[in-house]
Amino acid sequence: MKGRLKGAQKGHSLLKKKADALQMRFRTILGKIVQTKTQMGEVMKEAAFSLAEAKFTTGDFNQVVLQNVTKAQIKIRTKKDNVAGVTLPVFESYQDGTDTYELAGLARGGQQLAKLKKNYQTAIKLLVELASLQTSFVTLDEVIKITNRRVNAIEHGGLKKIQDKKKIAKGKAEVLRLARKEEEAESGNMLEGEDEDLLF
Image (cartoon, rainbow, N blue to C red; front, side):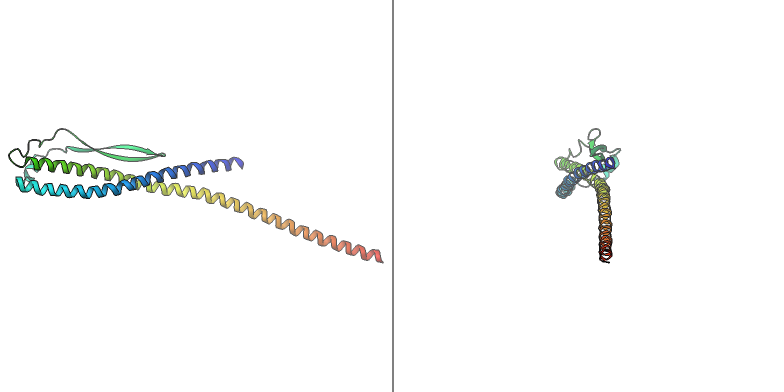
């Protein structure tokens, strides 16, 4: 019984530490999500403005770009991060190959097109980062709920056992008290009876 109790206490302590570590990371990610979303709004505003600027300077270039696209230049790779035994996916964007539109806009609007590309690359980086953060957020949220349920189950189970033991001890004490009362009552009756016998 003592071994079981010790094991349960150690398990409870480890689960509590794990829950605390997960909560800390959860709060950090939440802060980063808020910060990234705010930044995303600014970057997207800037990117949309630079698109309008580039269209105004160079004319409509959508068809030219669409006809010449063969493969994506910006790609995503996944890594794994480990927090207290929980694997979190981390997405990372990277550029694959060289810029095929490096010379685009040499005739006119080159500066605006370069600004446009730079702004949208920043937007894509932020979107990937945000996706990574939100995926980690959802994963951590689920794991924290499960871990907290386990901690509560151990605490509740321990408390219930302690309460049951207290009830049993209280019941035994009550039985002993009643038994003593009966003994006292019987011994009192016997003494009274003996006194009466002695008088006669």
